[in-house]
Image (cartoon, rainbow, N blue to C red; front, side):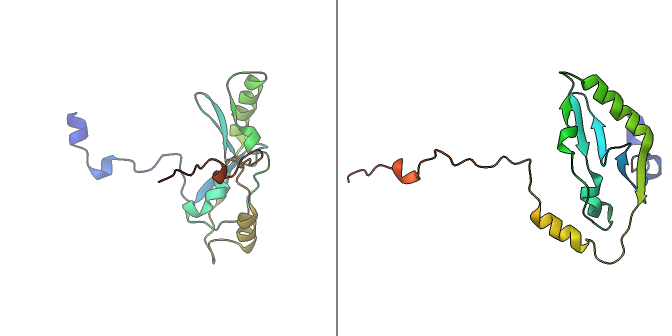
Length: 140
């Protein structure tokens, strides 16, 4: 406890040592995103969707197949997928940040306005009755 109480600002590393601020990790191996292995399964992360968080110019990223990257450690072929992801990390690719001019490209603005968020289920109104059918008139 005494060690923590006596820390000076110069004693603390204020960023993750692997984070290189001018180089953004954007893909691994043949994936167009960064596959992340966790304790329960894997999920795809697309840093190119959040380039503005890196103070870099946002453009239209490739997201095709991103949702299929998510899986849990059970069922068929999960060990094969884990091996594929582990090997992909040996081919991690980084890009320099770019912050010239506008923070977004015109193509990104158009893409974003048309993008469908497939993480939110669509409302199915089939067989739904109008609210008036549920209301009852109560005499006063």
